[in-house]
Length: 316
Length: 283
Image 1 (cartoon, helix red, strand yellow):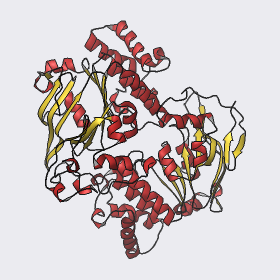
Image 2 (tube, rainbow over the protein chains, first blue to last red):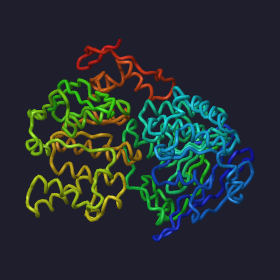
Image 3 (spheres, rainbow over the protein chains, first blue to last red):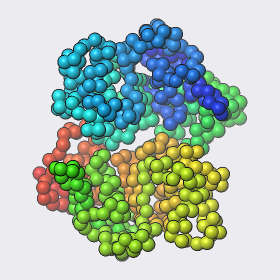
Image 4 (cartoon, chains in turn red, orange):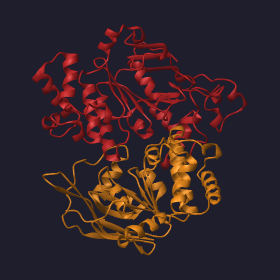
């Protein structure tokens, strides 16, 4: 892939491994991607494919014994080599994150307003009433009705969709350049989900967004570009219309074909363990297009269209 | 055949200032033998409570439920217990539905033992059959839920339910926590097994794509009431109630109807807009 210097974030050869008694779990393997200013990159893949780990690795939120190699360049600075104190200034202020499971990300014993104000005080130095005022403005901006009253309520008074909005408000508090959102629509019903998707389509006018989701349709709605992960690797990346409209990788095709609207044809088998990965192409044991060579050689990303890459022998 | 007439289930909340929430508010519908009725609506509209009320897992306050000619609402506790094998329910969270201390073999054998369906040898043989039917194999028999994936646990839950050969199944979002490729496997399995076992099914989901794939008719629920019901294609392609239109819009891309709360009439009347397609009139 061509290295473009105007990218806001560049990930190069990122490897993330978790040592376990059973062996090294390779959650992310030689991942390359870049996020440009004001674009939404949709990162799709199934449970355990390494999407969340990638998002957490960017902000260095993984546990200390994690083995991380490669480069994560934000505006030219390598985040992996920053001292912790400087990294702390990147978190929230430069790169915000909305973590998965809004139910557990908010502290149940503080009001939502207090929790948003905490972020504002910490990063922007606003104090007391000013921070409080800003929290109310933020809740209003993300579409919480009656924000003055709701700022004084505890998280259990918020519905799933409202909690998600509150977390997005917190992440936006310091106007980060990049927002990482990990499954913000998980578990929400169609109408609530639609509200969150609409909110993100407003957000991405001013921010770059890494939108992590297993929901292919939502990714298609929001993303300018889409990356597909399988077993820790990016197997396809490119413009959203190309990747989802004319997918090149058999895995992406399989994902689309398993949607109820598109015939509900499941992909045979199940995803491999990240400890004992298949040799050659990681998808080959489940792939209908696999030839003999697929289980021997590990394919690299091949350009199949303008800015559209797939990790598959078919295109070698 | 399932016939529900004027069903009402209320919950009261608050200790000092008691407030009554009518979670199911005068619901009536029929499901023909072997048919699957989809039930759609937003979180909190009463879908799950309706499903649980029909099986009397929560006691309805009013109304009549007839399952295969038996008036379920009139059954005593012990009669209901004997009737249970004929109506079963599966839930979204398969992991939470299974006893974490039981092996797969024990979990699947448990309903057979409780309802005294055969000798030990019979049960053993039946467990093996069931596990194959749901697409697992013998090596899974000794595993516990934490050693299985979400999709595999849902298969175990299905095997447990099928053990009793139920006539009626309530499926409450059984795939909404699964990835699409696994979801497709489980949906196909439920559809095939439902057909093989000639089960009548109430399929609860908030995903219209899933509902379309699984059910021949669909009911739309809003604030405890069914506001529209009819053949899946009629209701979802030619929705008549503004709320159904909103649900359909929300699941599509492009401009979306307003998300404001709809005003609902206090005493609704229902009209038939085309054969078998009923809609509640709006104010």
